[in-house]
Length: 270
Image 1 (cartoon, rainbow, N blue to C red):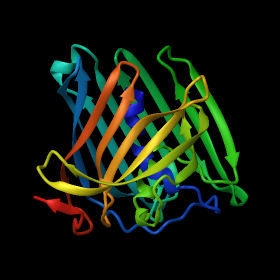
Image 2: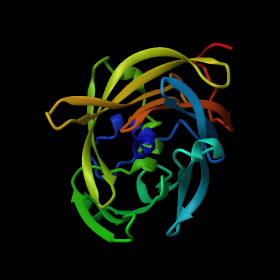
Image 3: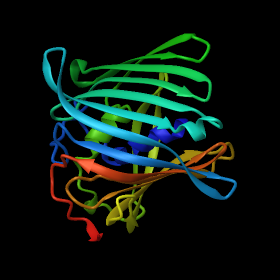
């Protein structure tokens, strides 16, 4: 289920910028926003409801400066727990202009516990991230990476990329970025697929911008591991996520949103 958490990567398609300080103007969300999702899993050709997810944003302070704190919670329901248990808690801090500051992830996936942390600093116009990863055996690994380009985790990717205008993209356009995972930093690739309508779990059909995230197989062939749909309006709400796992396929459908910053102008049909 680890790839489920890469739902936050979808918006990172635009995240490569010249300055390692990575500032951006946030027009998509305010403190108090809350988004809810229903999770589904394909079990022997049948889609079953397997759990829920909640994403919350609120105003906070981090080391004396104003910031946003973003929290993401995943959990499977009791029925699905008999097959696979997922309890993931993610926490991220970014500045008011969406520069990454701190990331934390505690996960229970199956019977395995993991813990990830990332601390960001920006010395001499570069981006430095100190990483700490505790594996299921309790072994601790640390990394320290400095780059001229911006680096992101799953939570800061979400916050940053929701501020960009995807309508400037060309269908088939590719984007490259660096993302932390465990104690390392990895390059990722996204492709813009164009626009498509989607009926979410709130019964509303939305006009969406669609992105794919790619991975490389051993034979150096590109493989789509995630496909994302987000609202084609100023909120850039993540409305649907399709993800391919080692043991099946799963989806996350938008159910409800509270305290949205902007009018939802992407509605096609209620």
